[in-house]
Structures are given as C-alpha cells and as structure tokens.
Image (tube, one colour):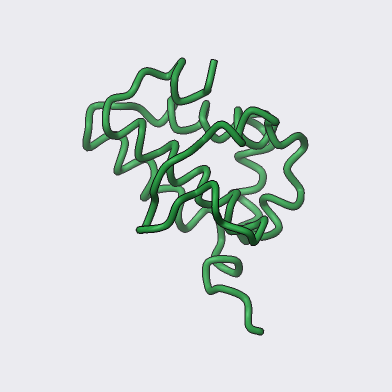
Length: 116
C-alpha cells in the first residue's frame, strides 16, 4: 500500500501554514513552536534544523527526541476523523499536531492545549 502523500511532504513546507492559521486568529509563531516542542521534544534549535534540512513528516516524527506521553490526552475530530481512533502511528502524530494548532487558533489557553 502506498504511503499517504503527507508523509513525504517536508515539515518546513507545512509549518508556515500552521503559523499563518495561528496568527490569523491573534496567536503567535512562538506559541506554534511551543506546541511543536511540547509534542516532539525537539529544542528550538533542533526544530529549526529539521526545517532547514526540509525533513519529511514521517522522518520528523521518527526522529523526534521524546514524543510527549501526555499527547494521548488529545481527543476530538480533525478532518472528519476522531484523532484517538487513528491507528496508523505517523498519521496519528500528524493529527495530534493538527488538533493542537486548531485549538490554538480557536483561542484555547496554552495550558489546556499542552494538557497541563
């Protein structure tokens, strides 16, 4: 079975869309970065290095230093699918991130987005 197209897309090509979505709703690039760092365990420098290398989504999550164990608390619907029901691990990680960016754009407090 062929991999989903998003797996081979570079994280750096999608990142500006995350930032744009957040900024359009009065949130910041720093908040987007904080969410990504919380989810993946990348430092800011490591995150920027991944973008400079134009790492694809699959590798981005495979190489994540420490996927946050609290990410399994992320629930809800994204793109018409319940995040917690996605069986394919890489797609689930991508959708966790999508869901958190959606929550940011909807004005949710960072403490709740980061499941504190």
